[in-house]
Length: 123
DNA sequence: GCATTGACTAGGG
DNA sequence: GCCCTAGCCAATG
Image 1 (tube, rainbow, N blue to C red):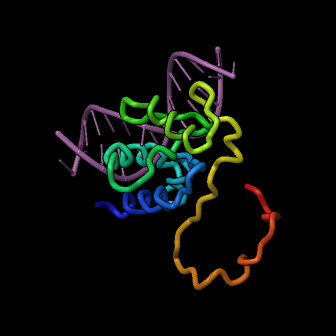
Image 2 (image 1 turned 30 degrees about the vertical axis):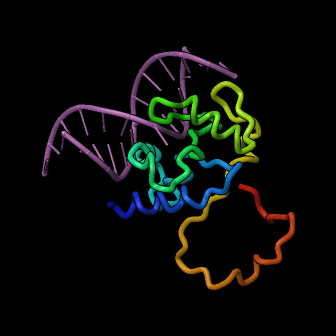
């Protein structure tokens, strides 16, 4: 499997329940910004792989696709506490999971461990 | 190795 | 705020 695909899968895997991420963000986190479309291509092959692909949505909080089962994807998201109106996610900006570029080296949360509700900067 | 495709995104109407 | 068009990238045939 291409390293890019592996990265994408890894990233999608660490999206917690109730949270969502856009294809673009995932592509960027995987090291290929702008490859959102490629991410979608990878997703269609990972229907079953232990990857919560239903938490991957399109930009602007839209649902995007899910094979031919976008409706199922919507239900899954709602089941996790995500409010979905039509084909758009409500409070998308707050539901979006902040991804990480790459686990190059994470010794042991050196200083960010005791962070409170003030994330210094909000993308 | 080139051409087509597809769970996308950003911009304009 | 929704629909259509053009651009982009990796995967597949």
